[in-house]
Image (cartoon, rainbow, N blue to C red; front, top):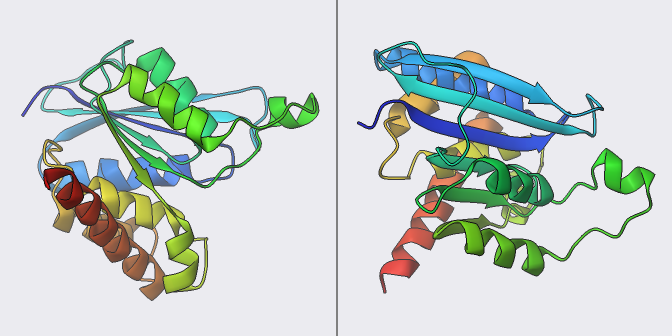
Length: 204
């Protein structure tokens, strides 16, 4: 395993970055690894930028990921995913991005137009070779609620081959950290399924 293995979670306040970080940190501990986490916040706690840095290995590392050294970027919001990629990603960074767009505080307050998702994806692909887009609308259709989107995204992350975190560990940590909610488990398994479909389609 590459050490440290760096996971960056990008979203806005209220989306659950911190919960995702805690789940992944717990999964790391379950596997005998040592997670080091750090969070950075924009001007507004709710509706502003939030980045959760998670560095996994067997040693102590600084909590913030250096520029260009992110291994997996888990994007809970498109604009924030792009911002994080421009600041921290490199060519080998794997991006998992939700299509759930939430106009962030600085865009809403200045009446700016939210960029098209196509333009965001195209910009991401100029920075990172592997960008996987997850249509989170399927969560509402299959599970009936969007409150479990984080479990869906964590399910997708658990499929990525170079991640040191095992699918069973992340699944177990969701139960431990969030609770044994049937909807969370269903969303996690759906994320696993959808990401596998994306990866299989790229092989053909």
